[in-house]
Length: 309
Image (tube, rainbow, N blue to C red; front, side, top):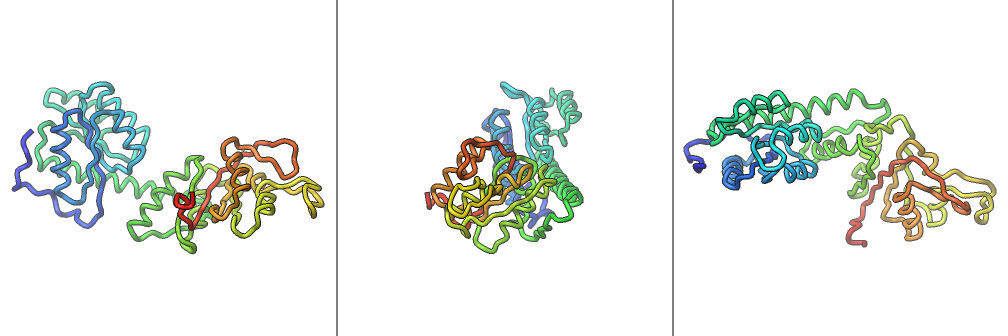
């Protein structure tokens, strides 16, 4: 494939909109190199490359991709099957198929399966720039519509987070990705930056929004009292335990427990928390047997935990 002629320039209208990520998927190294060189001339694009469907799907899980340039004919999983997998994995990505001039019928099939457009190989630079630019604009619009739709569905007591900068916009996008899952979330940041607000927002956008949101400050209590707060205790378990107490893990049943400043938790409480995290079971202090609870954990810390470890 010929190198892009220097006289052809990408459109300038979108300058300043921020870097957008394009994933180029083709089993031919020359095509991948051409697409990367052509699109990275315009600093609005960051280009990732994959030589096949399996690698492309892995990248899509890890990276925030706006546009995918996807070859139709590849060994193993072909482009149309990969397209369907991509749409199921993240329907906000706009997919542009790459086809030889003998594969137009398959390109039309791909459009019916959800592709945004197709490009014939070898690609004309002017059309490449135009199609990718329009696909990126549609991807951005799709994200904005999804964000507004989520806002209209928020609970009344779910905190609003107003984002004007690129960093906060990225944070809200990460919140939107994490909220619908049931995964444990760790929020890292300096004290006073609003980690509890973000945790409450994740809870409010999750399927557990109808359940309780229970915060606890792990640095405010000494080890034994923290264990009692988290897991509860039986009557007579220790001096002053005059009656059975329900732990916050049990109180958060069906909802979310927020462990603020989890880095301040002592080693013994960490062990008990790890057992809960791995098995979903808690054992109140002084109890003879554990029991299962259905709770999501969101934790926060102002420390660099990797350094502490």
